[in-house]
Amino acid sequence: MGQFFNNLLQDINAFLWGLAGYSSQEITTLAEDSWIGYLLAAIIQAALLLHVLAAGTVLFTWAERKVCGRIQDRLGPTRVGGKFGWLQSIADGIKLLCKEDLIPDEADSLLFRIAPYLSISASFAALIVLPFSDGWVAQQLNIGAFFILAIMGLEVFGVILAGYASGSKWSLYGAMREAAQVISYEIPLAMCVVVPVLLVGSMNLGTIANYQAGWFTNWLIFHDPFAFATFWIYFTCGIASVNRAPFDLAEAESELVAGFHTEYSGMRWSLLFMAEYGSMFTVSGLGVLLFLGAWYGPLPIFNSWTSGTESWYLAQMANLVGCLNFVLKSSLLVIVMIWVRWTLPRLRIDQVMTMCLKYCVPLSLIGLSGVLLWQLLAIPSLNDLAPARSDLTEHWAEKSSSPFVKDSQEKVDLFDGRNTQ
Amino acid sequence: MNSLLIASVDWHSFFFLLFGLLACGFATGIILSNDIVRMAVYLVGTLGAVAGLFFLAGAHFVGAVQLMVYVGGTVVLLLFGVMLTSQ
Image (cartoon, rainbow over the protein chains, first blue to last red):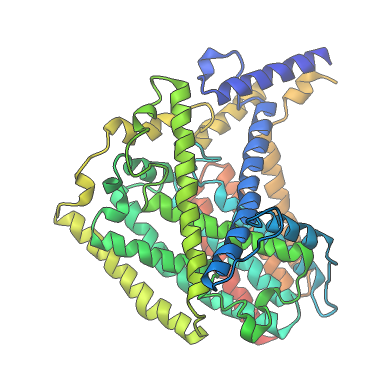
């Protein structure tokens, strides 16, 4: 037992040192190849990401009410929690927790209960590969952009299941519309994601982000006019793929009561909504990573700190500022989504499909060809005005060999090594 | 409590067994179920667990393709067809 606690303390110690950025040679025990270090790292990362989802939902619901109120020339919530009503979401959360959990007789009760969990898990899984700052990512995948697209395709599954399992015609209509809409909008969305991937030559979100280090002219949205247009097509398709107004045909409360979540109440309903707000943040975050300079601010104030060689504290401070930058930019895009929702009227389903197949798909293809031609003909781009320091752009590869972000092949070897001991 | 025993928790094997059992369990569910929509849902479980196995093996691209093509595309279309036909 004493030996066990000794090992435990050693492992925690090693884990903390690993967090502090020390390499594996400097400490006696490896952080991640010990079982407890691995477990702790996984739990901490999962808990942090879960809080992004939960706290994000609380803040964005409040923002939605305030923005909606202002747009409709009223104040929005003002009473709960003082002047700005900032505790309104918490009050709503408590109300939802206390509500009766209803499952209709007509419903397929197993699928009815599974659907919200499917939605929220998909929304959560997309955050795993979303880097919040240089190296601040739960799992660095070389195919991060592709992974997020694949996961976003899964989210619709929960919505369709919710609509089908409710056993109500309104829900089923909502689910069918959602299926048609999301399957169509995946195509232009993926086309737009391809543009920065081709410009940088990597699907690794960290590499794409570091490519945009330096001044704001280095952001890929300013690469050329086609890239600029592509970002807005991406954003439009993103709004459609997360099922927000003016594309919220799946809920369409004026015709379908509440669409796919008509029969849901209490926590199950709020899980569906948490998934929606989570994916709004993911879509915005992906847009920021791909086009809007990721965690780099418009001016290269903190960039000299991030090279990581001078001081660990300075590098972490720069990472913290970068994280704030990223969250701020993503939240701004979410606010734009809210603004669009309360400004534009809802489209009809045929208009939604026309919009996708006749406008978004051809426009995204034109954008893709335009950007490629721009590269091919070597037309001067804004990106060349103030090139980023090369040590910043090559920095990510070095980062990925830190004790916390490992190549998974290496991880397998570590585990095998463990077995033989 | 033997510290060696605890120290030998092998997450790679653990997750391999977990995903393997999930895939087999859901596959059995497909065979035993009578409801075609539930079968489709179990199929999503099986294919998702196989994607998990791919990720565990370090084949991230294959895993993501598995998620996108099989889980995301085929099964959504399957549900689409099922709902428009019999039920």
